[in-house]
Length: 206
Image (cartoon, rainbow, N blue to C red; front, side, top):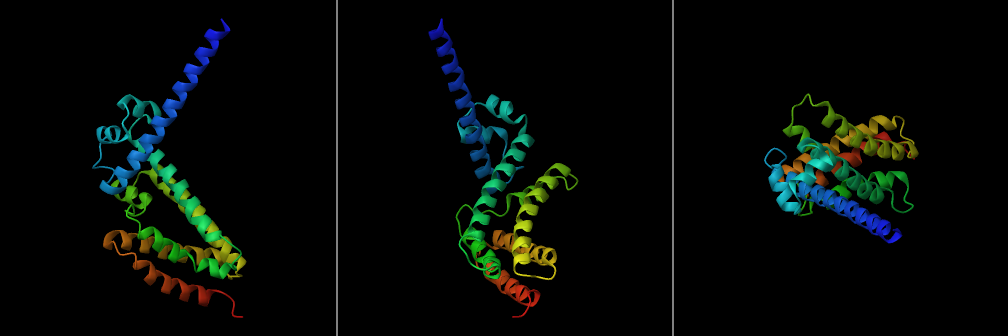
């Protein structure tokens, strides 16, 4: 009887692992397709075919295409923030030097073949502008990034670190959109020049 129970537990564990794998493949496939072709242009059949899963797995894991869109944004946002914030905080450089890293880091992203703009900005652009769920996901993502920049501005003794963070954030959004439209990573250099001037006038002299 114990052998039967063990076999049952093993089969259940294998089934759970397969479902986790299917979920990961669906998110990965949807990310590639949504980012390149746009959310509205990609149907669930295309995602399922790209992921090599059954359509039932998509609905079991996400409930709907909109549920998949939210999962993709949540996953992509977490991955991007981990990468960006790790690069921003790497080493023992003073805060003003880490602030100056922002646009060179973005330039690396812009130069990647897989760069198709910000998934959050793209999603908001494609959806009903009154869609509060996507707006909240986007704001939550941006707040994490802005808070990290604000912390650096505070360390650098900016008189109004929140203001400086939001100003840099606007430059970041503009550079991301411009790089997506032009496919020119050099837009980061233009934003960098503006950011350095902004940082220079915002920080205490000395």
